[in-house]
Image 1 (cartoon, one colour):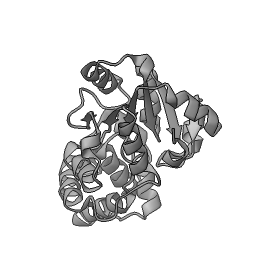
Image 2 (cartoon, one colour):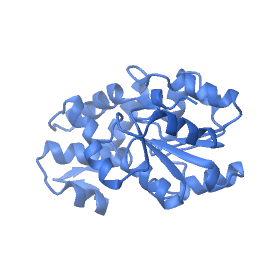
Image 3 (cartoon, helix red, strand yellow):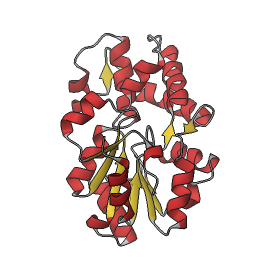
Image 4 (cartoon, rainbow, N blue to C red):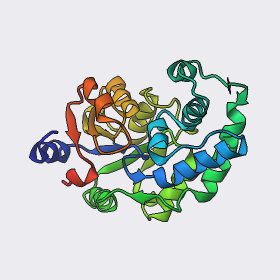
Length: 240
């Protein structure tokens, strides 16, 4: 991992901090897993333990559900299913299962979700130091706002774009470009902070710097081959 002194010196010169949500600002697994399993039960599909659900996270909730269905049915070509955006797997309607998941998750999305150590303090410190703060997540806007509101940091964000409000989801750079334009910031002044491949690739595609967190939901064995320039354990290691 990048030495803390190097990271803090690098971040001190940044004006805009763009954060991912799941696995970066908040550990949401405690609410995602019950919602996934509730949806699986309603359709007679096999349920999954927390670590399995953690491995399903990435590229939005529709793909979360696709991975869960594939695992329940022992379907092996999950990557192909996601790339094609299939709406039916093994006779199961992905959209219907996703709707059941989404309704349950919206009702329960703050019950077991917690900010990672140091997140609230870091966000407030950035605000106090006049830094720009944005969020770019593939999560839908309703649960994202509900989580930020519960922990009292919704108003700290200058802008936030979510899976159903961003021009295109990560790893597309479109969300980053939209944030830069809205806040009148140049690419050189911005940094993306995230924990998974879509974050790294969105930053890379937008030609902005990125700090990759290796203790979030992304797997280091998947992240390190991408050769991220700056890496840290988690938010607690990024204090300015």
